[in-house]
Length: 248
Image (cartoon, rainbow, N blue to C red; front, side, top):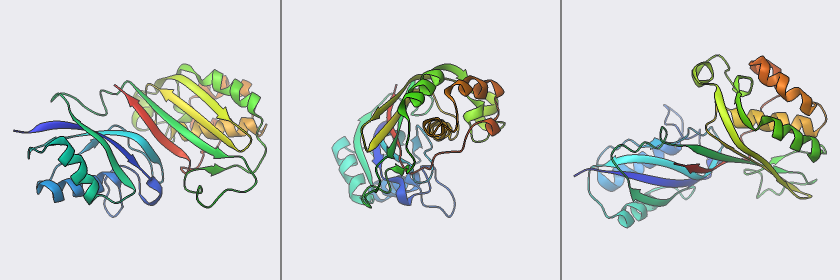
């Protein structure tokens, strides 16, 4: 008898072309499906809650799959981790109702973006932090973050503002946008009802420009109102972005 299983997955995305399986590209989804086949000898598709981009990491990606071959959950978790590369780990597995959907049932997602502010970035952190060498003024960044919280049309922060979800459902709610920082590290955490393509990295790029005083926080409402990507600053690099948590 088949069972639907929910997975919580962490991965270092440095050497992957994102979550989604693609021809001629190395992806997280393809690696997990390959591991499932080695374990069960059955081709089993797996569906993720979010399609993280190339070089983006995850601490709490969620996915589901319908497992035809019955296995104890611990055996399933250990078996998958045995067949997966060390850069991908199945953190937990659990049975869920047959109508559970990892993507469509998600209520909130939290991403965090990690920035190194010090003079020298350790080579052991280079895949996990964006190094900003210019001084950043935190107070205006905090003001800009407050203006982005709430429910808005985020077309200006979508990579393709006239395609995909940005053209059909650009209204998202940012429940919280927090900045935690010390002398050398800045972590920007965004919890929202959902994200448009590259929305998180575009928001971070905008906040960095505000911190560099290339942009005033007062321009945030104008950028939102224009509903066009050309009015928002450049995209922050994928390095430094983590999918932290998904709430159902």
